[in-house]
Image 1 (cartoon, rainbow, N blue to C red):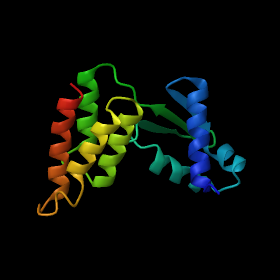
Image 2: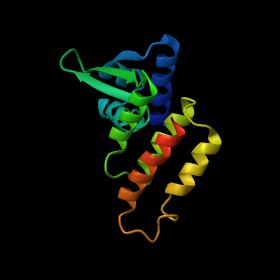
Image 3: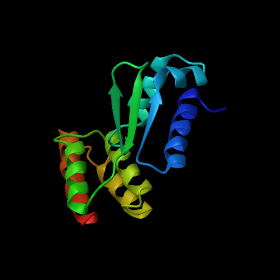
Image 4: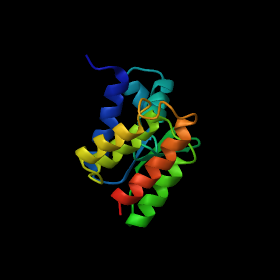
Length: 151
């Protein structure tokens, strides 16, 4: 049986796909009522499943019962895409966050399944076991690899 978080995530993704637009507007309280859960559960789904690394931007609008705008990240051109990805990676990145970026790139067909797997292997903790600051090296490696793969 699907967890409530998975159900909410799939519902929001279906809304985005049905509208065929890059953004949707939802009411947090209405969504919580629909799924018989607390509004904090909606917040949890938004903050963990709809992150920038996964290809989304979340904007909260004050008032009106918790209005939320969910936008799919779109890239105008290759250099803009790489700049946004590099900003998302930052100076340091965990393996989990790097996986989110890679999966988003794979889902948007920016990289192939094979490229994704090769990059994952090069960034995992076992590969970087002898390095003191794994997350910094991982960020540098990911930026360099994506600069080549996405060019």
